[in-house]
Length: 252
View 1 (cartoon, rainbow, N blue to C red):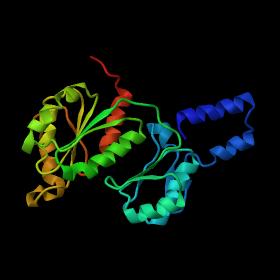
View 2 (view 1 turned 90 degrees about the horizontal axis):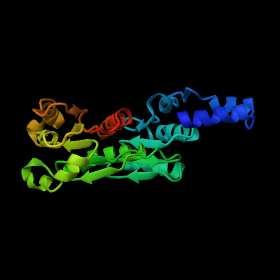
View 3 (view 1 turned 30 degrees about the vertical axis):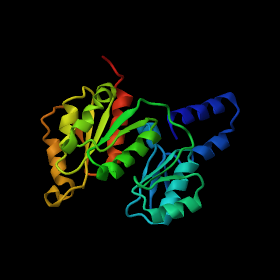
View 4 (view 1 turned 45 degrees about the horizontal axis):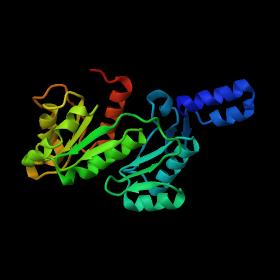
């Protein structure tokens, strides 16, 4: 349930097109639905502007299907992250029309297209960072933003980035996904005048420490005003970009 659907429901009641009893049935599951093992938050769209997503790690395939059905039955769009191929096979058999991104391990079903937002530039340092970037890309698309991908432009071959400098200066928000030492964030934030969001990844040898080193590198960036989310959290970066674009109209 989001503001537009709630407003339409109230208008139907006021005009007499909808009986109170039927309206009560539609509102019965607000603000959440208790499934026993999960309380699905149907009010999140009203509060935050986008529905609850399913974080699939630690959940059985049957639990994922039950939560997905609850979300879709409430009229919300479905976004599932960290979804394994095995669980996706069960989900696809249970619910028609779910689209799976194997690289990003996400599943999406859009029943009510979100309002079109501004595009978001999405960069990776290396090809190995693409799975995290694809999670961000699918989240952005589900929130109404076109993800503009620029992949494999890390500092080991920084000349690859310069050919995209114009796009960096025109983008409303930039997401940078990088492992190893995470240096790409500082480079991009030193060029772009718009918000830059860093996503450290767990890619790298030994002392990359599963993403701790790029996380610390991004947090200690000399380029001021950057935002950094948790390791491998493409979903969180996309939500941060959406919040920025929702709350701040572009200006000169």
